[in-house]
Structures are given as C-alpha cells and as structure tokens.
Amino acid sequence: MFRYILLFILLLMVGCSSKKVDIDYDPSFQINSLKTFAIVHKSREGYNILNDERVREAIKLEMELKGYVSTAEDAADFYITFESIVKKDVPSNVGVGLGLGTFSSGLGLSLGTVRGFSSDEGTLFINMIDPATQKMFWYALLTQKIEDFESPQERTDYFNKTVGVMLKEFPAK
Image (cartoon, rainbow, N blue to C red; front, side, top):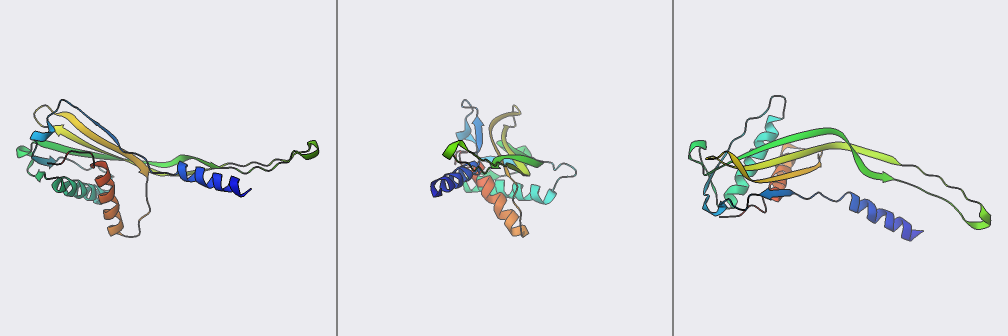
C-alpha cells in the first residue's frame, strides 16, 4: 500500500513541475553585431501597469547583465517588446483519485472520485525586433500559474526570476 501512495505522490509532483520556456529565433540574423536596445512597450488600458514596469525593469536588468546598453528608441540596434496575458480559472490536468477493491471470493468494491483544480495562468512573451525591417528575430514565451504575493518586493523578485529564466538563452555580448 505504501508503494502505491509513494507512486501517487511522485506522479502528482511530476504533473506539477514547472513549465519550460519556449524559445525561437532566426538563425540567419546576426545577433553578435548588436550593442544597444530599447524597450518599446505601451501598457494596455485595464492591465496592471505596476507589473508592466516590473517586467520592463527586469528585462533592462537582464540585458545590461548580458552586456547590452539601454538607449533611446531612435538610437537602438534592436527593440524589445513584451506582452502579458492572464487567463482566469484555467483547469488543471491533475486530478486526485481514490480506489478501493478486493479480488477475494469474486467480490469487489470500488469507490472513485476525481477532483479537478483550477487557477489563474499567466503568459509572458518577450520579443526582439530589428528596427530596420520591423521583423522579429528572437522570442521567448513562458506560461505558468500565477503566484500569490505577500508584498510588492515578492512581485519584483518573481518577475526578475521569470525574466531571467526567459532570457537565459539570449546571447551575451
């Protein structure tokens, strides 16, 4: 019985593992010639402008750590845009089931129940754009469950970590 409980816990943990960042890029684009960037983003009405500022600052910090220089839009070698989308009450793929039965004397009893879970889910897109052609040459996408935060600092730390993970694969200078 203990083996089954342990197996259930392991399967539940695998089902709740963090999601991978989806990254794509144009291999023909010469990223190594880029030096300066500008974050070009306009907050949409009705969205959390404070979180937009946190994402903007997290992107700027990560790019500067990689050796790029933030500059005005008209002087930038490339633009960075981002967009966030929130979906409310997204159902989970994880269900909890319980079964009971016996094979002795041909008798059996089973009881099963499944309870689904739902949570809010956020998707963040970060795009790198060539200003000369207005074409995207690199992007990262991450969708994950939205955390509950106790303070503004926890939100800032969360966005710094999330953006860091998303831009990890972008080449450093």
